[in-house]
Image (cartoon, rainbow over all chains, first blue to last red; front, side):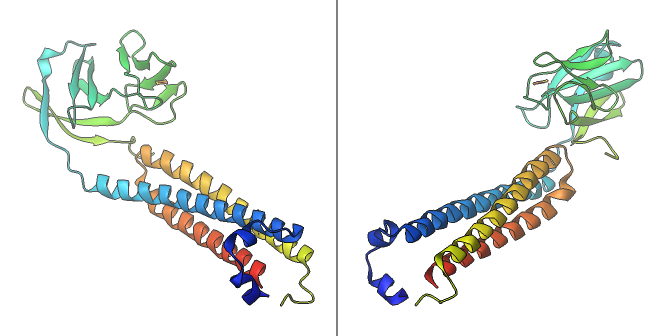
Length: 170
Length: 75
Ligand code: FES
């Protein structure tokens, strides 16, 4: 049977006149499609793995982003870190505290702004609110916290040393 | 030649069973992909490797079931 089949042209096999064979072909083709979809899912997971390896090897630049006294209490300063496309926001919520976060909302990438009145970072697009303590989500559609820029005070300068994607211990 | 006990209906049932398993594995993979992506974007990179390994195992399972379907057809 098999040898007879293998001598037949492909079109005769794919467009069989027998109903049972026709069912086989359609099921086989669907199974093939599902298996290829499975391969695509695996490729997606593998791509994330490669991206995480690449990210693990990235070293952040150490860069002065502001002078401590140039920001008033309750004020903000925008800066780019680590790359020129990565907009960040630096806040001075109280006399001796400075915090900085990525300005890109983790929902759909709108720019967040500081609401001094509510003491939180707010996204105007879909009312996503973030804590200024650790960048965690207070309300709204975002599910992930804002990446935090780790700062170090060196004399009068505020120096960015790296980006922390998730708050410690989460 | 076709096996006497391997009627088309029984083989179709076997193929349907294999397809159901593949769909199940695919659902697991879809969930894995979205969960891994979410964790990765949140900075939890420790789940990325297990996610990729499990997804690879699911794909191998799908591939084995596909071969089973092809072999069943030509048996
Ligand atoms: S983009 Fe910020 S809440 Fe939707």
